[in-house]
Length: 373
Image (cartoon, rainbow, N blue to C red; front, top):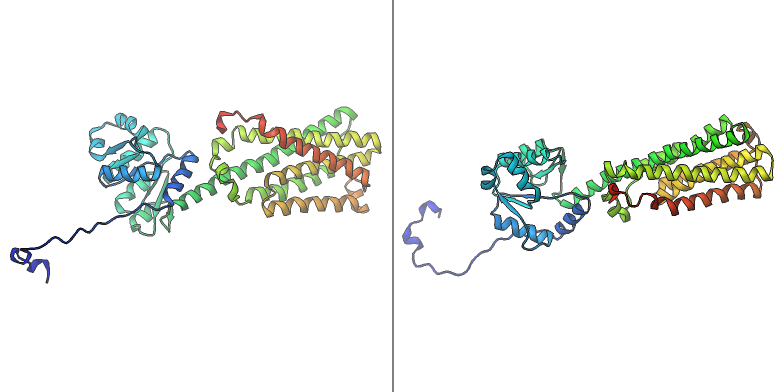
């Protein structure tokens, strides 16, 4: 029997047996994922077509905040001019009963305030706002074709944790860029400073042109490339979430460059000075070269040694250096001489001491930087 065949007589004398309640519970993983986003400096605002009370209840369940959730409705948005809307959105947590046109106004308002906006959604009515946002994210498992076509990124499992994981990957890229630049710029500045200091003291460069080329080959090529391509470490996710363009390439980059340059200069200068007091010029030059390379490789391993690729690149470069120095014909080609236990002790001791010193004093140099807070 269809509903069209029903009459009032068919539904007379009915007795209530009970109610059927439908619930769409919040996923257990939603609250931790939202907390991760807050740790990363990402402000989340819920936009829903549901009743304001429903949106408020869901928001409080996710955030754990009770009673201080600010809700804005689509009807109220219609009453506001753009400047008034900008002020209202400054501390809004939930926007309810929102139409597609109002979602576009919301995105534009946040953009006027200088924010980088990411919009998620799965319906055709979300497509205009997804397209307008700097990062449009479609939830692809249940999403419409319009939402997927408008998006820059499609999350196939509809999980907020996947968005957090993508954010971690992006922040890790900035950390890798900073570390790679620190290796290249900081190491080269240290090399220049050591070369200039040696030239001022003796009237000639402590290292030959071939030694300088060998040094750049072993310190700048494989180790820097490995650092730049290293995958994020799961244990360092809280630190990675605080990365980003301004944080990674501001004071943090200057700190890394300065620390590496000073450490490299001190390690090489100490080894070269001790070697000049205990042996010939060629031997002193070789010890300085080993210490210079060893100091930079030590700092590289200290930064990314937990990554297997970085570890392999650093140890491989160190092994190649030892082979080149200890092989008589090849060593002479690079202006070096094979070293004995004392020479290796001076070089590695100076490099190790400088690396440890850099690790101890480096993080404290800019620890009060507001850009890193």
